Length: 382
Image 1 (cartoon, rainbow, N blue to C red):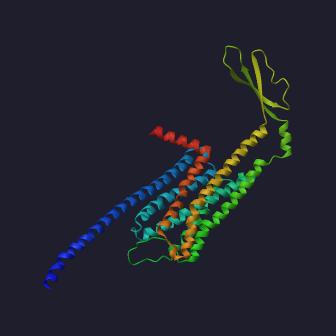
Image 2: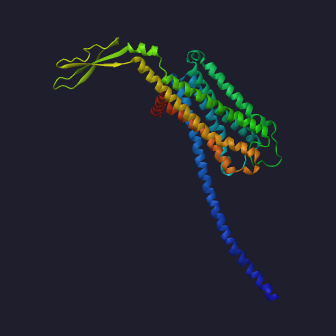
Image 3: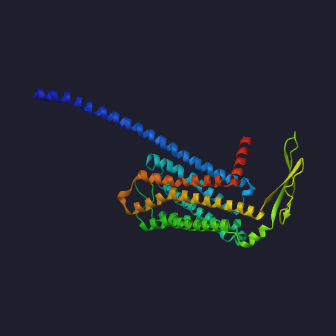
């Protein structure tokens, strides 16, 4: 018995140390990988947040500095940029912290404010797309009458309506929130109220998306009609009115060719001696149909505007559709909750606030010129 009693104390520490050393090593390695992942994720999400803030701030600054861009239509775009800027300032920085550490450490009050800001600003951003599409639809289908009604006051009223709807969707969760006695470790909208989930998802996404699809479809049809439509009266009228541009080309030996405009006017028909030439000088007359030229320019603008609307709609659906489908699924299926998937869909939706200013800036020549002018001014001033 003494032998057994002497052996046991000497064997147990050896076995324990042999087991604990690999466990400590694996834990240290896992901790290092986890820290590297958190740093990488925080850097990526912070870069997206910063890019969203800067791009929307540049759109606002460009419109405010360029008088040419200060129109009711661009006022709506500026309002959208303000809304997306609020998303990048009030919502995304807090979400970076929450996504990285997966634990809420900011308390109940900040949680309530953050959730309300998230729902309000993101919903307002989506509704701004509807307002812009509605403005574009009226401008195409009722151009003459709507041009008289298209005022800054009307645009402000449309923006105010979008914000009122957004606030009405974000307020209800504040009335049934439960203050927990213990420390708050998570911050999310309560999905137990299935009727609110349906109300909020349909009000913030599904109904606006249906409206956008209908409006963009009608805009596309109207744009195609304006591109293809040409009445017989206009054809007859344009046939007798042609814009003539005459140029004198000097082509004497030993001298460089030079071109200088002679005259321009309207003629019912081109004369037979228009292309006549002398020994040293030659007159070239270029005929172009003014009406057709104007129609070609208008058609090109309509095609570009329609293409831009299609890109905006496509980007919006790709960014927000997964999130709102997942929100409805989670409300009816507790086993379907995957935190990582929810975070991915959430940030995919936030990405739409970065895409919006890029699309509007790159698709509008006036925006490009004003933006480049603003950048050059800032650089020279610096």
